Length: 493
Image 1 (cartoon, one colour):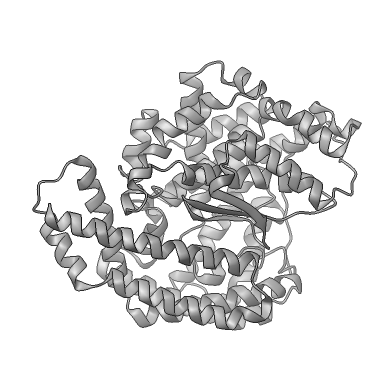
Image 2 (spheres, rainbow, N blue to C red; image 1 turned 90 degrees about the vertical axis):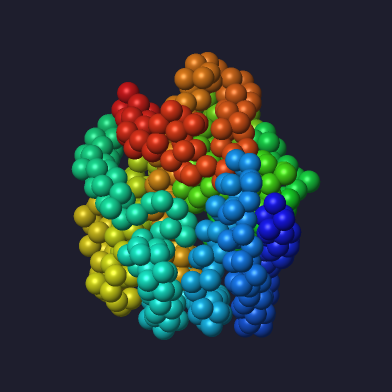
């Protein structure tokens, strides 16, 4: 196993270097002074090239070829599979394209922060056209090497094994039943009175509440922290997780569930198998599985009445007692279904429509069917069709609302709704194993759920393909019916 052992040494080194890269990205989003962006972008681009050079060293390819003939155990075979996948993806993309895409993405993302605030689509478009151009080049290169379509090759960066054929089928089914379900739930909720909590809710109090909830959810503060950024995310590495959120002093509701959501990502990272963390096989399986953890926490657990009851006194202690903070009203607040502009603030019923819209737009963009200038019209057409929301000339709440396209993360968005489907399927498996789970949660005992996740998802990392992971964990590969059943049960029954 001489060659395989040498590969482990190489990938461990890459892991440590990626650690520094991830903290640099976090700092750029959360701490860096605005006028430092150009210098930081150049430094990060150079660092990215260095990592790329280490990964594509021909010696790595030689070691992989030799290791394939060695006597490896099951874990090592899975490890080699993931090493080869990452090596292939890296060697297929030229170094100059890696650097150009990094520079263009940093420039576009940094400018987006103010352009979004100023509703400046025209200014955004100048930078974004170059990001799209480079992303199309990347997709073309990957397509030629992998034999997949250009857009499928990008999907594979985030969701190995998934493709547009399956996504069209899955999302096509959702589009068949979702509009009617939204309409039925909105009609049902018209007669329900929901009191909006009146604030000002200071950032300090919201932060303190968030920290309490993170602690209850098992976040390890000795290996992570939470800060503020313009777009919430969870980054870093398992040994040093960096969460961010954003606060609105007029509305504590969004930030609290944002914290719960990102804590789901963080717990997954912090509980990946320690002995494998430095290797690709020890990383999260896919973005869809990663998103299933955040949505397990936020949607399946967090917006459930049992969980809200378990943290009710913490909310009252933070903001005081009032009719708006009575438990039934709080439950109604977090169950309110309303078609609206912003994806990250959307309820779990309308959320899939936001994702399908982005999937259809970016598939058309990468396929060359539309250009960047066409996005606002297509965006508004689909928002009106799917949610009845008019976004004409409202770029801030339309195509400028997300960060993902600024750095060319095309193929990423489908992971969100796939994650919601995985999460519903996972929680269904938890309920089968522990029929009294809701009673445990209401008492503040989340251990049955977390123990199941640790055994079946967290500890498995990338040892299995996504299909095999779900099959071993739940007895089935992805089955979207669990999400549909969950929404009907929670909102209509």
